[in-house]
Image 1 (tube, rainbow, N blue to C red):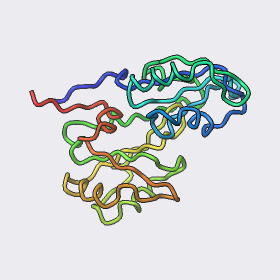
Image 2 (cartoon, rainbow, N blue to C red; image 1 turned 120 degrees about the vertical axis):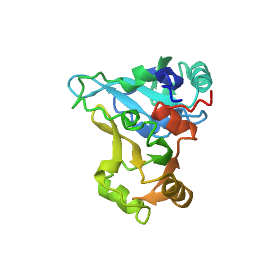
Image 3 (cartoon, rainbow, N blue to C red; image 1 turned 90 degrees about the horizontal axis):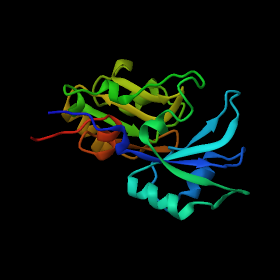
Length: 211
């Protein structure tokens, strides 16, 4: 049977006190010694669209998030020391609030079900401006994909670097994963995950239960 995994299976650390001109790369570098989710940094913005000194970053486990918080509490990013706290995955996903920017949210979990999960792959590490056509070209030779088979994830109108691709059958999906995992799109290598991989199970809120 299939059942949902709670949002708090993913954990993030909230950051307070960041320099207003901080870059995403600086935040990732600050947490480099811990198992963060690649390119998961979000920076807080006020109603005027300007950075407000807050940020958040996603971790692979609650243990890692807590260890990072304890070790880095009060350390400096640039010229400012930061305060850290652990927050839930739900709070991370809504970090800038539902009314910020365009407010557009595209969640991969909405498009995965018991009929298609075996023939689906999640892509991670995509260029933020990737198009459906680029993804179709990436999988050229692995079935007939159309825009209806591709979902690019967005939170608050911003691309996350992840996408869902639904293939015609499981064999084609597995062949694509075996041959194309860590190949590049626009100079960035792309990781591919199926429904047996932890990343896809969590981001798509699915879990296989043999009971």
